[in-house]
Image 1 (cartoon, rainbow, N blue to C red):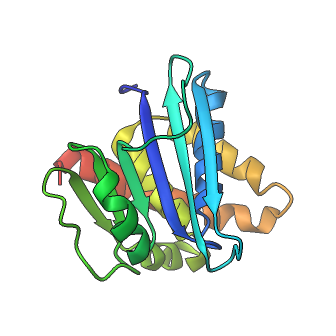
Image 2: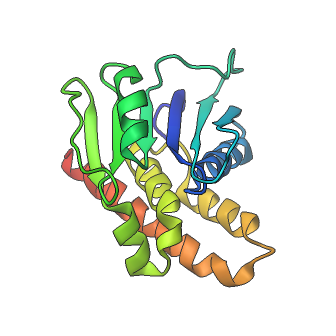
Length: 187
């Protein structure tokens, strides 16, 4: 497994599922015996307002859940890219949902990956699972947690809505494939 010490900020509008993606990532890391912190933040209006979550993963105890300069950013919308893009640590990773973000990142000092997450999610079963496509891309690129473990956590998260499990797992797998391919081609 690659270096597991990481901080990732996942951001979008409320209702886009980034808090859920962060929770799934945190549980997958915990299941693997890693130390984790999960710090959500959202506007009072919730759905449609701003929402982000920071997940810190380490083999050692996590000192603080607050990270000023995350190593990675997953962004679902343009306002989140504009707000959090400049905060990513130089040499970090930025994954942008190009289905909803029409602009390009100006961060030449970071690796930037564009993924049409909404389009890919719709293609494999449900457009509402774009967040899981983004999570899959991150897991595929970083290898910070095991993909099979992450799938099990997704299944557990949707265990009370069993009919949604196949589409959500398919969205994660589609993103995972994108991430693995990006890692292999270093794009």
